[in-house]
Amino acid sequence: TVQDLTTQVNTNKETVQDLTTQLKVSQETMQDLTTQFKDSQETVEGIITMMKEQEHATVNSRQKDNNDTTKDQMESRVFAPVLYNAGLGTSATHLFFDATCESGFISVHFNLACIQPEM
Image (cartoon, rainbow, N blue to C red; front, side, top):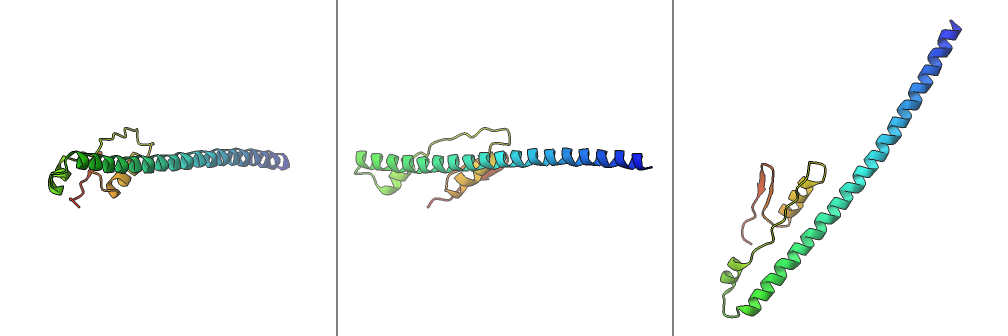
């Protein structure tokens, strides 16, 4: 009947409106997650830059203090900083692992490890 069809059309319109609302919420959530990922990426890049600067400063400081020490002995005394990135799986912990590994730092993430050979 026409009345049944009209009811069905109205129900379908409401369903489409609900799905449209859910889609908008999902898009906003995706935008938020993208922003968080970019922020995490910038944070990791900043930490890596800081670690490299700290390592460079440590080497320079030790070289000034130990002018008689050979380069090989000097390198054996330089210690990289220890960083922890604890997260629940939503805070780019794997990105942090990949970034530090690519930058030449010893890195561990759950059951993965990255140990770079001496350069």
